[in-house]
Length: 159
Ligand code: ZN
Image 1 (tube, protein in one colour):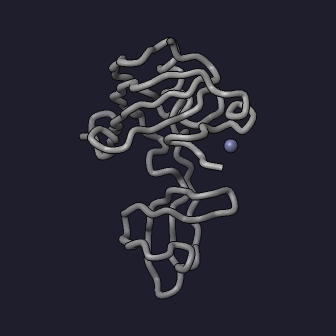
Image 2: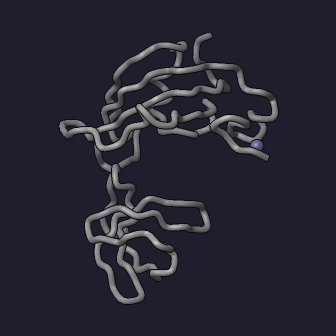
């Protein structure tokens, strides 16, 4: 079966900023499961998956505009420390903040006693990304999954 819109795809990936070593990979760990056509992953990677099938292994370079977009200056925000839970906060490092719109990856700029200055740009904003992808499984999505916009069952939302 070839990947098209409204398919459930299970895959392994590694990603690197172009010209740098990879620092994020699912190989050897839990694969990722997504529903295509519902913005579950960055548009450039989803486009590269279209037409592929189970067992395919490929590499693709995704320009920043098709990945996490341009880096915007002035997106620095002061956030109360409690929003970071027990995460270790190091200037220059990354952290996850819980916002009204869900979890969000940020870069820590400065750590104070009760507040933390963060850059809200996605850590990979403004970067061209190189992916190594292995398609493990492809199936058609159930109608309910299409309605919800996410995968149910293994690797997806249990509800
Ligand atoms: Zn659901």
